[in-house]
Image (cartoon, one colour):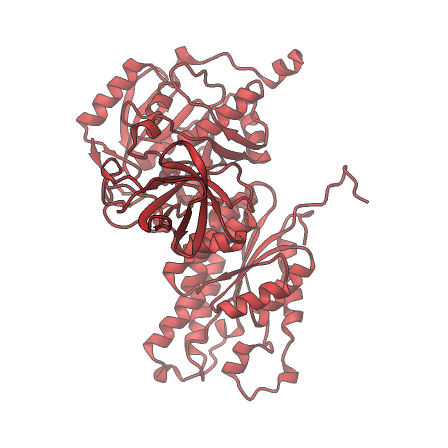
Length: 237
Length: 362
């Protein structure tokens, strides 16, 4: 029975890049299950359609965050469909090169791809959606940007040069942005979800023992808790 | 004045002509507009992002090429994207002046338009052969995707290079509901917002679906601005009340903010409640402004609806002096041009009700 004195809070409005596999899909599923209003972005139309069917009421957006020309078209659909934005997860990532290579064997284009996907894409998309996020903060709903990081952002693992360098840059970008956006009420988090059993990990380490890897669903739960802690009390989780 | 013909939102040399409450003029670099603020002032921007509202396509009954410029929508609801009003042009694009554009083929109710991947049916003419109601086919997700993929920002012949969405989205652009950019907001960046807070002023936003500024057709232009839906967040309504109670001024960034706030106030005895509305009024020399004290805006040509709005703030003699100064100093005009700051003349300040007075009336 509804109680007019305690209206249920408006659903959380969430956008996730790389939302059709791995951690992104696990996040989309978990938030969808909790009643959030979810938009997800991925490159392949068929995969987007499949996940949209899997999660009724969610909004699938076909786009590549590594492509500058597509960023505002993605942002347009995100804030158009959700009517605003409370949480942005920059999850889409590229290894740059698969199989992994020593830096000296890495093509410049592979480093460029890693930077375009893992650094410039999150920068551009966050910037394009900052108006929507800060509006949410001004309205008291809070606003969080979560950039998916990696232990390769901190540790110099041989073979992880392109990926590690791009994630290190993203991690530092997140920290600076977090400081700068505090006055606007927008929190910027950078989190390492751990080594997960995902398509990206399989590309990087094809012979890994999958049983030792973390389930993306477990990582998604932890990240959702971290975001909930960064939002004001009373906002639907 | 001269046309600003490059899409740079905040050129270092942007200028500001300030006309104060006593009618005095002052020139300053625009990024220093914050110096004109006082502690307690409330600056309100329009955070509407701009739709790619120009759609090239085909009028299927005649097979002729057309350009559709989306011009209006009855609400800001996220699923309410099937029905728009639109101005239709014949063959060509923004590089031809709108005045010189060929007319579209005759449009009739039931005509089907192919616009990229989107299809739309003409639901009727809206009192003019080029102003139509359109109904888009498909799901809201499909309509958003089609607009994103195929639409381009509405633009005019003074800017030659095709505009990108990032050219027309302000720093604070959020909900994509405007048909043209609320371009006064080009003056704002995040550094500026920080500076205004350091000065003791506050910043708030509303969302107003800014419409077309020109169609090139005198009969249609005389009807501008069309009805525009808007939304005032609760935090903004509260900030207005606080500013007024504390003697601060309300500074509107752009004419759309004036239109939304004054529309809301005209219906609520001078107060601005939170929520949605549909601005239908025109603002001119006989309008008694009830909320906005100061307007930061682009420069506007006499005879336009935007210029008429300026006449609500100050007297014609002061505006004529400002016009002469803009001309003499070669200010740049149009959406990427220089700006004016116009304080309401003291003599024009209308009697304003405080919340206490309203309570006493009830």
